[in-house]
Length: 126
Image (tube, rainbow, N blue to C red):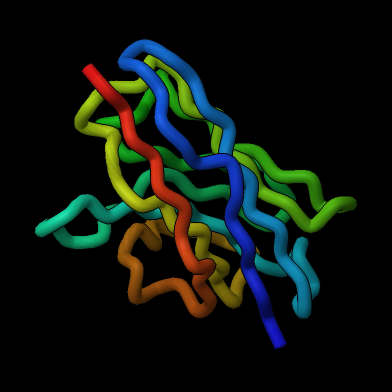
């Protein structure tokens, strides 16, 4: 079955950087668009970034544009967000998600994604 396992979360000071990883198994990785979402306490899960199956197109939420970079290594079945200039408002549980299509096509809703990881906590202190 499909498994997505996130890692790399932790505590970082404002202005710092973190690189998360999501290792996928049980799927033909390059056939799936991959996304990252986050959920803060008391808030809905929100879109952060997504990348098409071949990695040619990337999409970002306005709140992270210019600070986060999503990439993928299809040889390693892994997707990464590099998160720079972190702010306290970036504090959340970050989730990796896989979509049964290599395309994103404006799929920024969590309902557009079919498989989810367990999440990894990112805490940014001020």
